[in-house]
Each structure stands twice: as C-alpha cells, then as structure tokens.
Image (tube, rainbow over all chains, first blue to last red; front, side, top):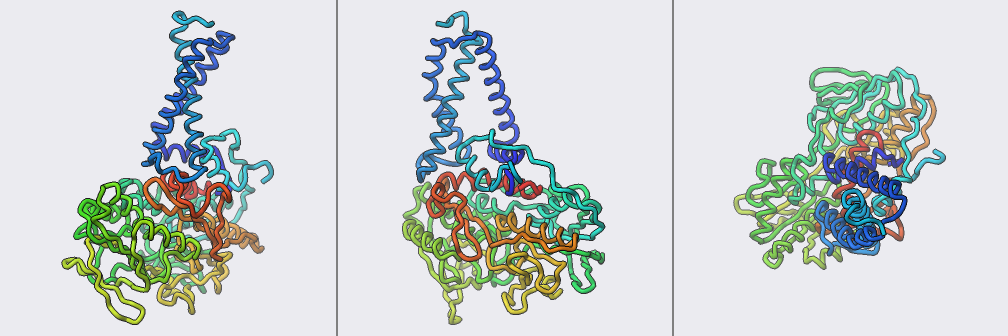
Length: 119
Length: 438
C-alpha cells in the first residue's frame, strides 16, 4: 500500500479478531481508560495500596495477552524464531501487563474504595 | 506527499511488529484533483487487479464511462486457499461477492469476453454485446487447464487421496478432506507443479511444508514419505530462496525430484505418471497427490492477437512492457495481474504494485502525456514453513531480494511475525487493496 491510514489498520484488526470482538475490545479499552482517568482526577492522588495490588496483576495481564494472541493466530510459543519475534511477544506482554494493571487499579478505586482507602 | 506517513508497506508491517503506534497514523488526505473526461474505459476481469483499478479510477476521473466485465459472481481471496487446504480456515474465508467490492459509477457486466478487436477498439461478450472503448485493461486472470492432465478432473478432488487447492474454495476444502485422511493414515505424498508459468509459485511449497507439519503434530511423520516432483530444475525461481528451501526440505525430509511433469493420474490404482525431459514416463505411487494443472491465458487473449508471438507461445500471456504493463503494439491497452506476460509474479502482491502503475499511465494517456510510474517486478510471498512460521520472501524481476525491513525481518528466516502477516494481516491488506485504499 502506498499510505497507511487509520482505516487500513482498523481493517487489519477487524480481520484479526472479527468485527464484533474487535469493537468490543475497543469499547472495553476505552471504558477502562476513561474509568482510570476519572479516578485519577477524582482522587487527585494515587492509591498506593491499590497500585501495589495492580502491579501484582501485571504478570497475569502479560501472560493472558500473549495467550490470547497465540490462540487467535494458531501459534505456539515455540514458533518464536528470531529476535523480532521476541520483541513482538514482549511488546504484547508489555501491553497486557500495563492494560491489566490499569484495569485492576481502576476496578479497585471505583468499586472498593471504601474498603481500601488511599494510603 | 509531505507530512504523509510514507513507504507504508514498511510502516504498516513495522507497526504490526510494534503492536501499536496509532499516534503515527494520519487520516487520508484529500485525493488528487479529479479529471473531467468522457473516456470509455473497459476493464476485462473483476478479480483483484480489475477491482482495485476500478476503485482507484473512479476516485480520479469524473465523467468517465468505466465498464468492468466478469461473469464470476463470487470473488475469491486466493492467497487464503493454502490455509483452507490445510484445515486452518473454512472455505467461506476466501469467498465474497464480486459486486461487494465495486464502487458506484462503475458498470459491471456479468458476461464473458469472447473477443477483443484492438484495431476497431471494441470488446465482444458471450451475450453478443459489443463494447467500444478508448482504453482497455486486460485483467481476466488465467485458465487452470485441468484437462491437460489425463485421467484428472476436479470432481475427483477430496477422494482417493487427491488434492488440488488451486481449483477454488470448495476444491481447497476437499483437498483438506483428502490431506487430513493422509495425515491420519500416513503413506506417500506426491506434490506437483506444472511446467507452465503459474500463480504463486510458493503455494506448492507451502502445501508441502504444512502437510509435513501436520504429520508431525499428529505424531505420524515417521509413517509418511513426502516427494516433491516438479518439471523445473530448482525449488523456487529466485536462486537464493531456492537454496534455502532446499535446506529446509533436507531438514524436513522432503525428497525433491526435478524435470518431471505430471501427465496423467490413475485414481483407481493411485498412480501418477510423470514425463521426464527425454520423454520417458515414470509411475509414482501415492497415497496423497496434490495436483497443480498447467496454466494459460484465456482463449480470447490469444485469438485477439494480444499475446506474445515469440514467448510463452503455448501459454498466451499478453505482450506488454514489463515496466509499464502497456501492450507492445496497442498503446491504449494494458495488461494487469496473472494474464500479463511479464517475467515474474502472478500474485496478489504483484497486483498491488502493478495497479498504481497502470492507473498512472492510463490517466496520463487521458491527459495526452506520458506516465512516469514503473513496476520492477516486486512481489512477495509469505512462504509458510510450518503452522506458526513463515519466511517473508520479497523479490523483483532481477531475482534480487527486496526486504521491507532489512536487518529486522530477515527474508530467509522462519519467523512468527511473517506467519502473523500471512494469517492475519494479509487478507485485510488485500481487502484494502481491492477498495483502492492500499
């Protein structure tokens, strides 16, 4: 292609996950991000206890993200064949870890704030 | 275009590799200025090439009368056939409707072209219609000449260990029926390719590699023998790729036999007969046979005098300049896609790079000037070497490797990222190409 457009990239990801799942994932990501921004502004501080728990969930997020992509693409970890593959896997794991941490932190602050007040 | 996100094949794949980077994206900028014209443009064929060109032309021409002629109701995403034939995708994965991809402002005639008169500038269809044109693009694809193999017909596919994934979505699915039984039972598999030019020369290799991998996954590789028996003298047209494939075949235990052309199939006895270069016949027993028939241009191309007179005389590809795809004798005719008589690349990747060249020259011709775009034979083949890995082989007319990411995605390395491109990114890119967006 001569130009990369947002439309093309969206088309690629729709193809990858199917339109329904793709847009559900986009909606979930937007909702979680919005919730995270909301609690940050609302509380005007980082709840360190929740932040710590969220960090503990990062490995789980990383593993789930890699598992998801592998399952979606008929792949296995043994298919990693070179440095670039490792970079892709680490990138996916990193996104999963950060996404998982944001999800856990936001959930805690939104729904369990009274039980675990900020430090 | 200044500020635009350029060389996007590279950028696109790079973004895929990085798994993100949406910030680097831009919404497409306004299209180039429309040209007012009353030109009558006829495109023969609504496959990948004809459809992509039609979509691009309607964005650049105002008032042009664009007619696209193709009797096929279904559009087939052919790069997906090798995945269907390995049980990785269902047949519907490759099927859509021809009309789904065509823009408003293009008239589709569901007819078959029977003749072109390049002097009188008209096209005749099987419905008896005669269409006059100012500019003609010949993109009907090619003919799979199954009848050229004695004893073989497409209705045999899926039974008695016979596969033929080129035959279309249903044939590819039935190929998997036969291949799946072979994977369970083992035995001897024979993979073939024709002596003629062919679509995607990587496909027979991919099929062999996938069957090998499926046997290993089933724990049955020890019960199977794989033989790759072909008329050529090497495994791939690009020498450096051929050497790599030779090493991989050695590693996987696939035997290669060269300079033998499949001539007949005896399905009852499960014997395939091959002719060697001296005319000698050799019987090969098989439990699974993958057939790829000889391929040639549609009859009307030859009969209308559009073919090369001194090259591929048995196949009839359109005589055109390899760099501009313009017909050698008729400057208002271009060839696109499989039917083009150029040294390499009967693939969708070739089409992606050919279409903008023909678009440029066609619009230049409407303006009364010469176009400047050229095509150097770029094509790419995500050569699957097992489920989950492929080599992203990109090359040109000169057998040069032209990797999009030198130093990052090695063309001759079996990589997961190259598999991801084949399995998930390619169809979306193809669809974007059909819509003239890529």
